[in-house]
Amino acid sequence: MMLGLKVAVTSLCALLVGWCVMVLVEPNCLDAEFRHGAVAADTDTCSKIGRDMLQSGGSAVDGAIAALLCTSLLNVQSLSLGGGTVITVMDSSGDVKVINARETTPLNFKPNLLDECPKSFRRMAGTKWIAVPGEIRGYEEAHRRYGKLPWASLFQPTIQLAREGVAIRPIMARYLAMENYINSSEDKALWKFFSDEKGNQLQAGDIVKYEKLADTLEEIAAGGADALYKGRVGEDLIRDIQEEGGTITMEDLHSYQVEVTDPWTISLGDYKMYLPPPPTGGVLLGLVLNILKGYNMTPSALDADQKVLTYHRLAEALKFSTAAKHHVRDMKFTTADLKKLSEDAFADHLRSLISSDHTNKRKFYNISSQLDTVGTTHVSVLAEDGSAASITSTINHIFGSRVYSQRTGILLNNQLADFCHRVREINHADRRDSRMIPVVYPGERPPSLTSPAILKSDWETLVIGASGGSFITGGFASALMNYLWFGKSLPDAIAAPILFVDGRTVIKGEPGFDEDVLQALVAMGHQREEAVRFFNVVNAVSKKNGCICAVSDARKMGQPAGY
Ligand SMILES: *[C@@H]1O[C@H](CO)[C@@H](O)[C@H](O)[C@H]1NC(C)=O
Ligand SMILES: *[C@@H]1O[C@H](CO)[C@@H](O)[C@H](O)[C@H]1NC(C)=O
Image 1 (cartoon, rainbow, N blue to C red):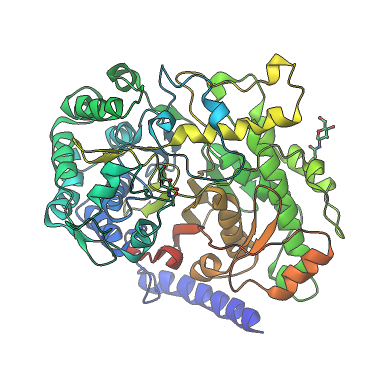
Image 2 (image 1 turned 90 degrees about the horizontal axis):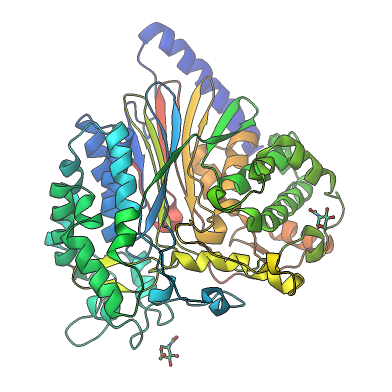
């Protein structure tokens, strides 16, 4: 009934808007909507900094970079200049490109590194997991191609915040308070940075000044990415890493290169969806959506008599995507035909294996990795000139490697830990077959689940992406299903509690998820557990009929900004 009403109201609005466009030329937008541009970042402060860039004539990329630099102060646990980023960007003519600035494997790394991979998710800290950072090289390439404002101006608001000090947000305080994220005896420098004079960890509301980071940002603002990759900042960063026993060298920074490619696309009804190619998770998200689109779902898929089947199909599609995870790798280091995973024929085949009345044992899906991770941040931006930027940045786990460079104020990633997905294969394979021994190559980018996306139809541009490690694929797919197929508004589509399927194929309902559906799924054979915490976060901006709707996920207490 509610849903029917909403659909009716929506189509009425659509009619009215169409009429107003003809009569007034000005679109008749809702109060919460914007007309020119908008930024959906993780925090109110950073969305506004991005919005200010748009308002002073910046492109979507300008707004996104400024918002991300700000986020590196407000959600330190999620991203840093010592991390990596994947940028899907559309210029004002509608041309889409992907800039992959994910971290790479250094020339020298710990021998038999993958022998240290844990069997289940746990802390993976220390210099051995650090990959060569790509974040700033990624911003540089994006700005060189798409920037309109001066490079240094993107840094100014964040430098000012860093010097004045910012209050610790409750989300970050939650992680500071837990010893398994920052350990006082193992992560000394990071622990000290976030402690008061008495040695107690800072709490929500306490003010932190990021003086060293401000110096670093000033040098990068003035000297470009080279300040980090070839200059003083890089030398100090390498010295700090090496003093902690790390193997990354100046040569690694010198030789780091971003990769600019065409996006991969899938078609979803009237929409074309642009996704970043492997080693990102775009191909896995595409697979899930390609499987599900074959069921031609409409709002009635959530009716009482169909709802269980709908979520059963979602759970099955997610299990297949977990199995496909171990195929995802840097395409420069494999001869496998990964493109196949994104094609309709492959999804059609997997859909034909989905039964409508029962699930299967793990073995059936050929799942070899069961490692779950959390972390990352996403920003979605649409600018007045029609350009769009969808960027997911990460240092991998919460607070990355927990290695904090005191000379530069940069926190380092633990991205090499993502190669551990590869290790599980050998547990199931013939150990005598040397082809099955997992290998990591210098220069290789580790696999990822990040999938910053842009969807385009004749009447809408939707910039959308998710963060939250293993929660990305399920959280993202749920938001899109709700929005594109089930008739929910963008805010409702993102707010709806999700069904999560973990690496062991166990289903978990986010608090508020329909308990009856969970019980019915268990009756179909799904294994169910309670999850302590959900990390899925979706940030999106849509422009339709001249009106812009922006949503920052309330799960991370985000707020969008626009004008
Ligand atoms: C912190 O590190 C110490 C020393 O390695 C270890 O004994 C302790 O268990 C760790 N604490 C937590 C909560 O992981
Ligand atoms: C699992 O692997 C086996 C052996 O390689 C293969 O025959 C089967 O089709 C795979 N199943 C799925 C669901 O991909």
